[in-house]
Image: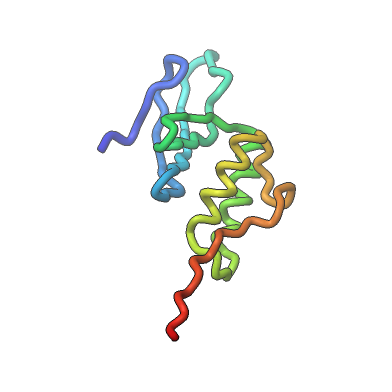
Length: 116
């Protein structure tokens, strides 16, 4: 697997920090030389494999995304892994990456069959 990609004509190294069935969140780092620093030099790339969309996030939005992923992952809930996918769907739709600004994230639990 290739561990780099090109964006705006510059080469970025990829570090995958989150993976689910639907999403990949990658950290993109670039080393540049001389005075030609591009606008985007460090940040995150969110890939939605079902929709085929890619979103680039940097600055304060990237900080909020990292914080939110760490917060959701550290919570001891019975919601399951789908809660991160729900957060990412909402965050990409609203362009608000701070988890505390979202409504309560819950995944519908399957109902248990009752035996008679």
